[in-house]
Image 1 (cartoon, rainbow, N blue to C red):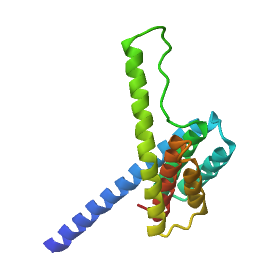
Image 2: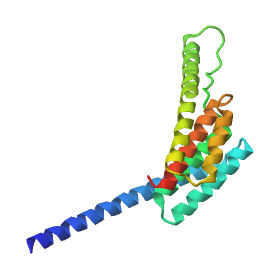
Image 3: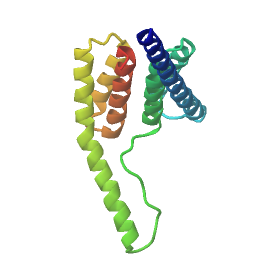
Length: 179
């Protein structure tokens, strides 16, 4: 009798923990979708990337309605990355304009160049990882293949956009495989 009661308590505790995890994922997905909605309202930039972002946003909303919260979260992340890529690449940022020689401007310039160098180093790595994951998990999503092809084409001229496109492809691969 004690074993049965103990087993029932463990089962109930496990079920309550599993339900909590589902609510957390639902909250994360809902937060990502609301952030995505705000970004989509004021999005601008390259039309091809914006069309892909809108397509992935619609997928994320459908996944959320179907209560596939992990998939919705990953698709929302991919759409956010595509909107960022459409707006412009994180090649670096410009410091506040100042006249003459100033240590703060030199520091900002050094930081901007370091960021650009880091993006240039990471873009090929992310692209290679996306290609390998697509092959390993046998991804069937044609959009992922298009994103990888687009990232390859932009790798030399626009490494920042290539990096964002690769990350978006990785997020979609993760959404498809479920982890």
